[in-house]
Structure formats: structure tokens, C-alpha cells
Length: 179
Length: 180
Image 1 (cartoon, one colour):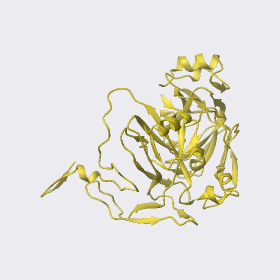
Image 2: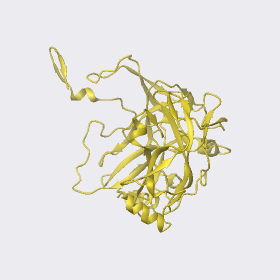
Image 3: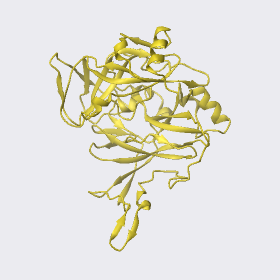
């Protein structure tokens, strides 16, 4: 079951859903619109390797906006810190943003119960597109879980800013994990 | 309702969800983390036609990894056989893979109740990306259903490795060509 906007507001007020900063104007019939933060990260070297740290170059979106190159990955982040210890989150582009040809995630719309932080977005434009910091870019939805809850305690907990992949941490010293 | 990780583990132990092999350390708060199988497929034709099976070739991922290239579609598969006769499933890239710029499904995340298979993945990368066999690549969530269950009996039933599109089976051939 998906929460309605009214229920998101009620659970926000009850502190069972955390969204910071929160604005009631960003509520939708069954989601909450989140905004784009100021910083982007792009990978500096190719190929990127899941077994190694991949260095990034930060880009800051100026006030007049920034034109994304098509077919290039930009890691971005939500302005809001969001999470819940009670509901499972999924997130998506707003329809108006998708209609401009922008992906905000790459087949990775499912979050974890218990994750709290700014969310990393994967921006990928189908054609050149100007983006602005603070624009309402995506929406988060909340789903009722069935079963005992064990909260997220992973390597991205508490993220701020656009977070590059940390998959290399799974490979550091144990070849068995890598197999 | 989405199943929590402990509920997925409980239903797997009860035989109502299949995940083989199953490893407790891959249970996530509301999903199960799956791994990339060793075999990829890529199409060898400049234009794909839904009415016939495309020429394609197999890539076996070496343990030292292989760099996948952007602008090319690779089909891969889950190392695990995954599914349930009781729940519907959805597939996602894991955060560590999507933030490297990889897709694992092309707007087709839904797995039907009754399909218990090694799932074929549609892999694309935004930039050259190394992929390794057995790497953690995605996660599967399970959803409670409402209504009478009609189990999947489709053309991909029983898949144990990557399977290319078989949409051609839906086309009717006649002497002037074929129709959808």
C-alpha cells in the first residue's frame, strides 16, 4: 500500500517520516516533491571500476543554471534529507522533468527503510537540458511494509551531497566477497 | 505491501519465495541483493526486428572483469534463480551500481507471480564500466498481491541463464511478411 499525500503529512507530523526542510506545498496526491541540491559530481576517469575508488570532480550549479550534456552521468543530490524507520521509500522523476528527457535514477528507484540522508540522484539527459539548483526535480513515495523491520545500516547512511559509488568497500580485503 | 528483509528470509525458509543460492548476508531492509551471472549477450545487427530472433553473441565475463561500453545494449542475468508463487517481484539496480552509471533494467522492473527464473537484465552503461561475474548488481523486492493468483506460464518460464527477446513468437507469418 502506498501512502497518500495526506498520510505523508500526518506521518511527517508524527515524526515517523522525516523530510528536512519540509514544505506542505510540495505534497502530491501520493508523493512528496523534492528539490535539486547545488552540487554535482562527475567521474574523472574511465572506465569506472566497481572494485576501486573512482575519483570525481565537483561542479556547482550557478544561479543562472547549468546545461547538462546529453548521455553523460552527473551525480546530484536532493536538497532535503529524507528517510523513515517505518515505511519503504521509492523515488522517481516528476513527470514534467521526465518529459524533458531527464532520468534522475538509472533503474534504481528503491530505497531502504531506515536510510536517512540526502539522496544521491543519477542525472542522465536525453538531450541538452538546463537545470537549476532548488528546482523541484523528483518525488518520493512511501510504502507500507509487511514483516519485522530491521533498519538500514549500510555504507551510505547519513549521506550529504552527491555520493559516488562505494562498492569498492565490499572488495577491500576479502577476495571471497568479490567472487 | 512490500516485504521487509526479515519477511523475505522467513518466506524463503518456508518455501514461499525461491532465491537460490540464498545468503543471509544479502538480505536488505526491504529487498534481497542479487549478483551478476557470468554470461552476457549482445546483439549483432544494426537494426533489430521484433518479428525475428536477432543474431547475437555471448560474452563470458572473465574474473578479471570486462569493460562494457556505452551506446550498446548488453543482456545479462541474475546468478540466482528468483521468484515466488505467492508474491509479485520488482527488480532494481543497487545504489552502488547505479551511481557508477549503469542500468540493469529498461523500464521493465516487474516480475510476475509464478516466474521462478534467473532474471534477464538489460544492462547499459553511461560511460565505460568494468563488470565482474558474481558482483552485487541489483536488488529484488517482493509485494503482497490481492486477488486470485494466475501463475506465470510465459515463454521465459524455466530460464536459467540470459535469454534474448522472443517477441517474434507473437508474430504471425504469411507469404507477404508477418503481422503483430
